[in-house]
Amino acid sequence: MSTVERPPAPVEPLFTPAKIPPGAPSKIDPPAGEDLITVNFGPNHPSTHGVLRLIVTLDGEVVVGLDADIGYVHTGFEKNFEQKTYWKGIPYAPRMDYVAFFANELAYVGAVEKLIGIEVPERAQWIRTLFAELNRLHSHLVYLGTSGVEMGAMSVFFYCLRERDYVLDLFEMATGVRMHDRYPQFGGVAEDLPKGFYAECRKFCRMMPRRIDEYLDLLAGNPVWESRYRGIGTISPETAIAMGLSGPNLRATGVPYDLRRTDPYSVYPQLDFDVVVGERGDAYDRFLCRAKEMYESVRIIEQCLDKMPSGPVMATDRKYVLPPRAELHTSMESLIHHFKLVTEGFRVPPGQVYFPVESARGEFGCYLVSDGGTQPWRVHFRAPSFVSLQVTAMMSVNRYVGDMIVVVGSLDGVMGEADR
Amino acid sequence: MTAAQLATAVRSAVPGSVVGHEKGLDMPTLTVKPEKLVDVCTYLRDEQGKNFLSAVSAVDHLGYGDEVAGYFGTERGRDINSTGSWGAPITPEPPPKRFAIRYHMAHVGDGPTDRLRLQVWVDDGEEVPSVVSVWPTADWHEREQYDLMGIVFAGHPNLRRLIMPHDWDGHPLRKDYPIGGEPVQFTDAE
Image (tube, rainbow over all chains, first blue to last red; front, side, top):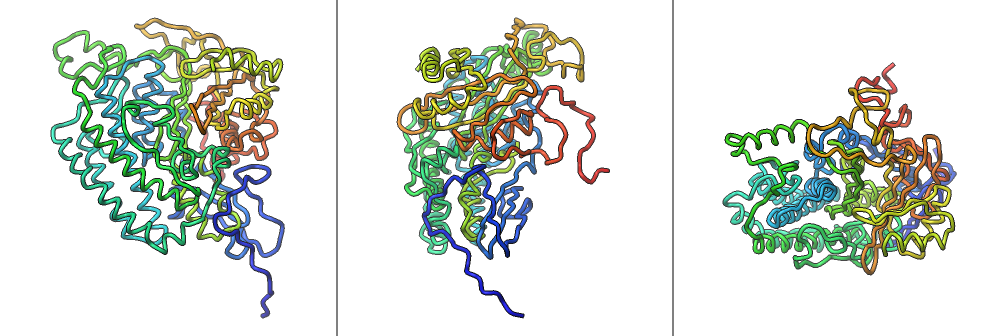
């Protein structure tokens, strides 16, 4: 059997910025030619972070065509929100992006609060900010760990999951559950921080920067890691903005777009932190951005612990806020309010609002339309994973299959959020 | 820039495009004619710096603001507006057409983000021009709204279902889509 001599498929040099292809921007059609094979990559594959399906056309080991297909965990969140009262929507929100769950709740709760115009007490805002940053740490830790596993670095996964568990312990301490907590509510947070939380959280803040140093020693200085990540999936700032990237994916290209600074919410204007930006917009910069953001998150948590004022954690407007549990035994009005709020819910003035927050993945926005009733008329979420997965094709084409894994991993998509 | 100033600027650049403007609770909102949408978006991107498209959201207003007395599964969709026994019932303004497609955009770069909402109204069966040529990121956003809401974006290079299975019947986020009791649609269900 004779083998046919054929020229190897051309591979783009490193640091070549991704170009927006003609036609559909998120799909690259394979060239006509023999010897091309089409491979179904996923939906069930360890490196697809859930159930992302990539229809890849290969020339030897080089990707020449790619079409991403999502929707395998579509569970109709937006339709479900329309069938529930506003209250019952809160536990739904964190189940979309199950890694950066707290940001989802914040966006939904913030949108409703803006429509009803309820004032959130100062202390509740600080507590929300604290947990938003703890959650950012949680998300970035999961990212670091899983991308370590993708590259074959098993130990960093265990280290990251160890610290992630610490974060979840803090969540459990304050909210009662480790994930999907329903902690922020319209008008504040469900309960005040428990005794012992401060000490435990400070211990965590003292420990965490050293641990991040460790990860960076393990990964950033590792020649294997660097050779797999450097120059892969490069994107220019202009292309990244045109493709709607946000969060660390955009900041890695050098654009300091961070909603905590540009559209501040909660108490972020009162906090001192740096927006971490990269230079070259490749997978390595995205990794480094996330890692360095973890230092900033720790800084913010420390400031929250120092500056948090005392006071109520819930607004007092009984038309929207559940009365304290103790009052139900003594006050008839409280009992009535409680009953009405839980069964029928409150009415929200007609209108529309778009409320974006900086999730660990980027701009997570909640667009809400009310018709004056007790259930949302329409809820739509702007999911950063959904948007960022569009660039998979243009980043992966004319590169090796192994680099495609790096691209998908470094975009840090969560499929639960992309499909909703 | 306020909504009125913005409306004047857009009107002078693309005559006959802006139907209305409002201050909005969160950001200025302009209502434009569907046929002028691409021109307006190009102008906003190039001259007003709205280089970042956050989201495309379609809203079905079937039965919006109507007094619906009934139960789940009425002809008009469902009873979402049952009058509460407390609180002032506020009736929203009736929508001009059935679907509203809202584009949230921002400026990313130096200076404030200056968010803006653009809305177009269409009826069932009417087409909206695609803005993929203006913001490439609109690709999946429009495919999602086509899939779940059934809005046809004319000129979209790859308008296929994105989230639901490719052979699905109907558009689940419409208000007249039956909830509960629909047949299981799997290809191997026969």
